[in-house]
Amino acid sequence: MNTFDAIVIGTGQAGSPLARELAGEGMKVAIIERNRFGGTCVNTGCIPTKAMIASARAMHQARRGVEFGFSRSLDVQADFPALMSRKNVIVAKGTQGVEKSLRKNCTVIQGQARFAGPRAVDVRGQEFFADKIFINVGGRARIPDFPGVDSVPFLTNSSILDLDVLPEHLIVVGGSYVGLEFAQMFRRFGSRVTVVEKSERIVSKEDVDVSEAIQKILEAEDIDVRTESECISLEGTAGHIRVGMTCDKPEKSVDGSHVLLAVGRDPNTDDLGLDRAGVAMDKSGFVQVNDRLESNVPGVWALGDCNGRGAFTHTSYNDYEIVSENILRGGDRKVTDRIPAYALYTDPPLGRAGQTEAEVRESGKKACVGKMDMESVARAKISGEPAGFMKILVDAETNLILGASILGYHGDEVIHSLLDVMYAKAPYSVVERAVHIHPTVSEYTPVALADLQPLE
Image (cartoon, rainbow, N blue to C red):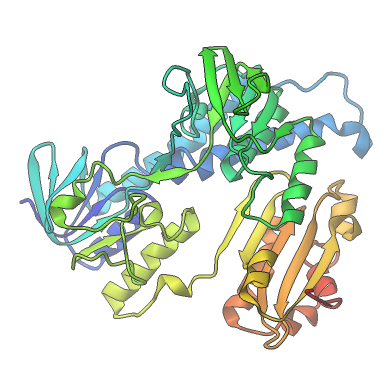
């Protein structure tokens, strides 16, 4: 009764569809979940945060009534319990949907999974066996060893979703993707917001011009951005928290009611008993996998955030596609076939694909760049969204698109018109000569590509 063809640990965006497909192919599949069905995306990631961002944007647009030709009689105020309730309803539907579909197709086992050997998994003292085991346990917020972190109440990307009172002043420690999305949404809800970032600029993995433009967008909404905060420390009690930002000048600090730690993610692999199965991890705790997502132990795969090969829902789902194709249909799909692509859901959003300008320069390739300010894009102007720009990098010898950054109105959607061409390995002229619909943001990608300049 405890022997299966496959065991899937975790019900995230790779584990759930893989379990269903394996079961659909006639395999006897067990899937193990210790917490909420659906993983990070459904419960504490994409779905709840984008639901809250939607509420924040609606409020922000309503406050701009005069710009669009209508007046408002009342100031728009957040009904925080109501908007959190809206988010909770959306999340519950997703979680329940995942659980229902898995129970229909697989044997669902609830509890903490720990390896008892390379083919055995223990859950609450009961062992389950399979020749194929798939790890999809996701990750969690990293808790840094800041002075005072053990004595000060703090929020993470998960616990902030359980708030029932709007913070008076939210201090966000970490000026990258997660932190900035929360910073802008809570500012629009009505909180004072300060972003504290250790590096000399926010979203430091992006190009300098992208970082600077995003900071201007946030500061235009009265978000206080403090960079170069080398020695971060915490002190205080609930409702009265001080964040120190320097080593030699303790007076350089900011006081707030709440603090959100958004300084990175760690994989949920430390309590899996991977050593008992001989599964290798790197120094950060990620399961080491090859391009086919196989671990060093035959018959054990790692998918999603816990393998260090991607940290997004779309990369996790692609992990599932790679593994299922290779196992069920004799394919040879590899994670290295994937072009890096993601979005930062500030408003306006940043859509990214391929290499940054800095990476292209570092590679030594001869390249050209096309750039277009969003204030020149008709759709952005008439929509009252002129902030940002698009930048497209092209290989000067092959004419292939190397990468793009679309910061602006619908940038998270526009990026796909370039990403698809990159996957097709088609020259940039395919986009340049395409006739796009007017008025859209996408119609200006050919315009940007028509004025390529050497990257000097």
